[in-house]
Image 1 (cartoon, rainbow, N blue to C red):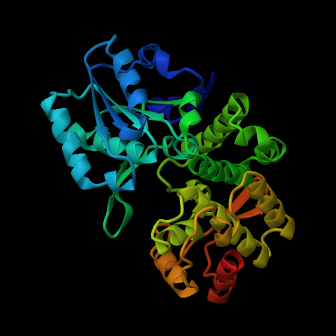
Image 2: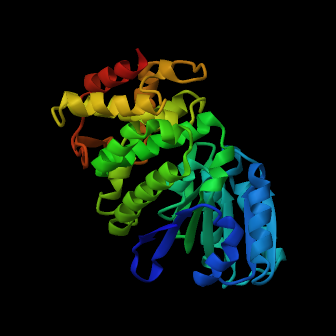
Length: 367
């Protein structure tokens, strides 16, 4: 198995990537010094994984489980309240451990509950989707949504352990699996040209979900995310901001299409728009945009809205630009972008970008 360390001094933790990890989760938990009682929360779509984790952990002490409905709708205050009550009813002490088994929604929700119950208890992330394995499970960002916007209420609360078992990826629907690859491409562009080349050379193996190829790209992605988080845990120095490459356009596109796009599809289109913007600003060569598009297409990811596998209502550019103004990454009224200068080097804009350039970038991915 591959192990990546997120180095945060006394709050450091390991990200394990391998096969058949869940069937020995009790040994992993024990080695990681995770204390019972255990409370396992899983997405209802991965019941067998949730059951397995709960069963294995019961060898170490009291272990209970609860499922939450699949989908973004579960990231709300009602679900959080219900989990707080459940923990209180099982008399979960401060030294017990929560386990989040599922995709990003369950990870964000359970992380938020762990951050707030008794002012913070330990939790482990067991991501079962590609997107969660390479992105949301690592880094300690936890949140629930409000009607106004996603992730509006949350906390930074690092997990004690992340366990990515490749076996859980076998059952992922194609569209969701492919969408998850967008974040992997992002890591290649912002920080790891070798990873980008690997994606290009091994696109077929990756799409066939070959375990060795998956392990390689997930471990490399985890390693990039871990190093950025280690250096800028709470987004204060601006370094963690580079992880938002593709997300300023991407989030606006997700919201303006009423979330008809999967997050990764929006990010792939967002990266295309932002690479176009970087080229127009003279930050990078046209090759960066073209080569990135080649890699995205090799992995069957969209670079334009019309390439998305399901039909999507096309929003107008004015709506998209207005949605962008509400971005969490803004400083005052300034919308900031993480843009590539070359593969492996990214910088954040700290000046206003002319509206007509932003409109051109939207037009580039909408036409």
